[in-house]
Image (cartoon, rainbow, N blue to C red; front, side):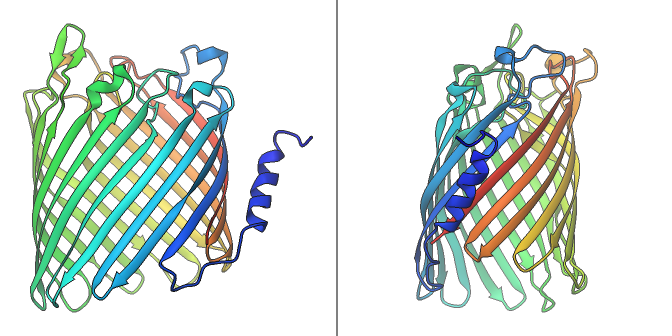
Length: 398
């Protein structure tokens, strides 16, 4: 019998070398299959000073997935469908075993030479992260989205675009049902499209969030409903042949009763830079300041400030190596419930390294390492933790 640490590698290699031939490049329908193995030395993100569930922090898991990919253009109309089913089996925490689902369907439509857009829907069922939730119970998160947008290029250098999207989230566990929500986002955008290929636009956006269950915090019941209005500049600047900047930055005003006095405003957005000199390296960097949701029993949103750097090395035609580092500071300071109780900020640092071998264009074998650490907040009960993980995966499209 193979050693338990050897079996994952053996299965990945067997999966790779017994795959059928690639599908033709013009085929609309492709089948997808994959298998992966992972190990995390702190799977449930248990704080350093807290006892581990069942006396153990580490666990390993297997993932097997399969599905289909359909992509075909009929005249000027393109239909794209991705449907995948996956199964996760954990070695120790068996109660976390679950079936994952991922469905995406989009119609990219075009009328004449000046009108285009897309209409679609998505559905996803995954295990919610344990970063901000202390439990060893299974907590599935189901998310559904419907979206529609249209753009009219009324001049060779000008375009107007409008869109609407509804996102709905619900959680399996009763303790997490206070994070169930529906978010409706509508936006209107005017873009200037110079001949250089860059884009400059102005985006007006409104997001309305509705939480069906008030959040209990001590003796209080918090209403997490919110309305967020944004006016931002969207810029894609192709500075040189090797350098580009992608930014969405502007003014955001958020009205949320459970967040301080109910209104928070200021500069928010994200700026990303990409540098790809001649050769085998690509570098990226980004900074952001924005609101973000989280799966917590205490709060629903934080105001985050973060930065990231990354690099990709195309070692050979078939091997790529990626390295990324992310730092994010999460600020809960406006929460009136926690006023004057002390520092209610925490930070998360994440680093990852992955190598991918593609012996054929539709076959990929990936090995990855990741490290995550949080500096917690005693007031919020988010303790400091560290986590290290390794993953091995093989996938094919045929």
